[in-house]
Image (cartoon, rainbow, N blue to C red; front, side, top):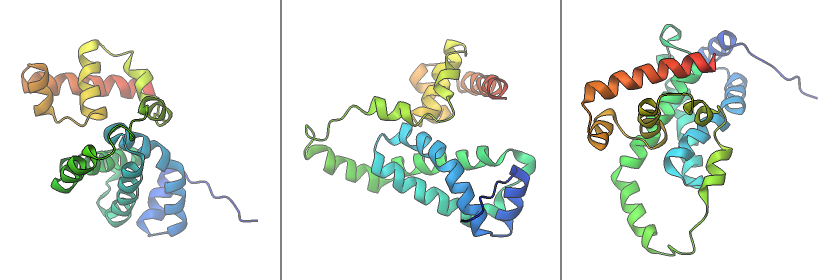
Length: 181
């Protein structure tokens, strides 16, 4: 029977910097579900979420040298990389064309209740913690992280200045960080 290895974050980062494939497998096994939940919240398509997750881990492996431990935790770096990749995918021309094509065909037969599936993927419990934020902070975080809006798009959607969006988002993130620690 193979020995199960457990890493602290520092050990994991060191092993990944040495391009250790066992450490990368550990990384995937321990973080894939949480990252998949974030992706699924944005795309609401299980197959597409799995494709983006695979692409995200390839990107994590190929770009690990750019991770800087002084700028934040490993999971935060992976989360931002994955979220940005997901948003880039949603904004790509190929995805939009595919959506138009498949949206017309079998639209009634493709209907499913994605809410139950989406709830299952909220591995970090972020949705639950959002209820503790002020309503104006909650709506900004919801638009940004679960709907993929940029700060500029949030500003236009909510009809408030961009600076206000940035301030509220920063204070909301700081509050969430306190709650999750």
